[in-house]
Length: 274
Image (cartoon, rainbow, N blue to C red; front, side, top):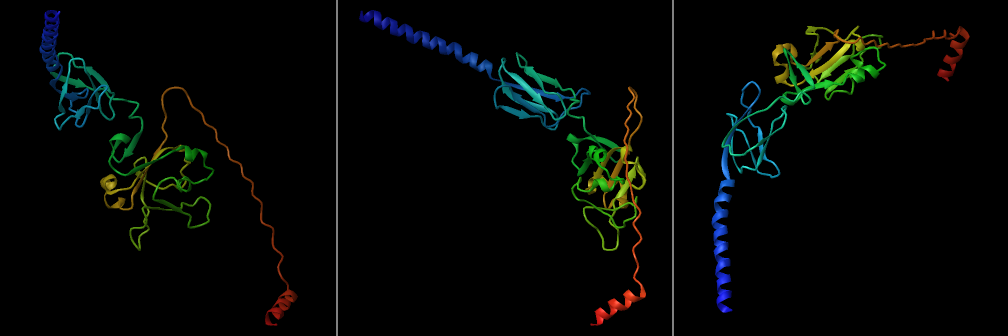
């Protein structure tokens, strides 16, 4: 009985050692250093792309050359993501070097902002640019498009200096920059300097307000007080779209006041003296 027990114990130790000998190479084979490069569809490298092992918090980012190095096993899956591009999952398998190509994500790049000579996506902008929601103009009952901008863009002040109907109000962006100057920003309508006077609000496609020096630099000294870019609507191919908007107003002539006579003048003057 004792001999049989010793034999079983030795057998257990032998199987345990054998299991460890087999397990260590397998574990070492699972953890291997993997290198790769992340590029876009044109072959340009993507700097700062996120590379993450799926289901874990282990990850890294690509360097200035779009390259990365990560420790992963053959059963792992790499999740590669970058702003403006579709996230891609890549199985590791037996590969040691990877070239991962990401495709642009059109749904993320849907908002396009006009900035001077070009158009940029909101996700790639670093300058201070505000884009006005044109639905505000559609629901506004004001006759002048400039007065409808009041309270819609941070730092934009609209002041009515006269009571004349149809007059363009005073527009100040980021406050006045001089004591003598008007401080009004440069207004460009379809790239041409203009004014909001006689501009139909229903004809406006988009309004962008360029605030900082980086956004207004291409316009030179005239943009010292900021720039407001107005893009009007254009014809588009496809199904016709007809919008009808009607306004109705009714005015009455102010009645002629009754004037005081000579007797009334003497009466009220006596009361003032007394």
